[in-house]
Image (tube, rainbow, N blue to C red; front, top):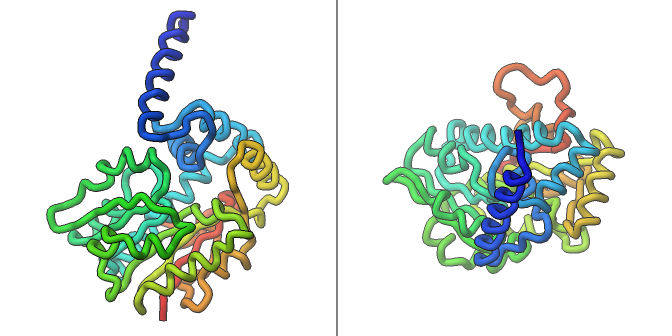
Length: 284
């Protein structure tokens, strides 16, 4: 039985935790996309505003936690695909989010030790967790960069990126559920193109993006809830998502529902049950 003292103790613990994170420059008073996603995945680095936002979105999309896991599943399969089938040994993971095992370097190293991975995010809470990302095998190297995807020139000039990755050799670039945080007026397509242009031939881009194509009414409610809380959230159509790969060769099955992209086992009965497009493309 939960007593009033239990609630008092919990409130004190929550207050202490919030105060601790605020020392790192984390704004715990408003929801953040990475922490909302962490909540859906069952993580522990989220706060009352994040959980409230996550629950509000679940009112419109009751399967949101399962959808977040399906999106994460695409990432695992894409990294494994790149390492096993195409021999990629360097990864640039943009919009890393709060660490959730297995991370990109863990998946790649399970295929081939010696992988180099650069993680990038601009959330102070991810910076505070960076050490958890940097545990790799002796033959591998993992680096975290606190940078903004919206400023590609600054990111590409970062010494840590250039000392970890050899940009004369193919790179697997990941943008998993991050581009919806950039508004159309800020031209996310140009920002992605600047990053793609910096990579050599034989590099790959894997990305996922939430879409209104599978359930327009529900996603409209989600978008409205996010904007009411001060979050940028832009779902995009298949055509808009495909534009992010312009000039690169899409790998079969092309831009597809994440659940239908090289699933482990049989094709799902309803591939549109997770409202994300996903795709992988190679630079000629």
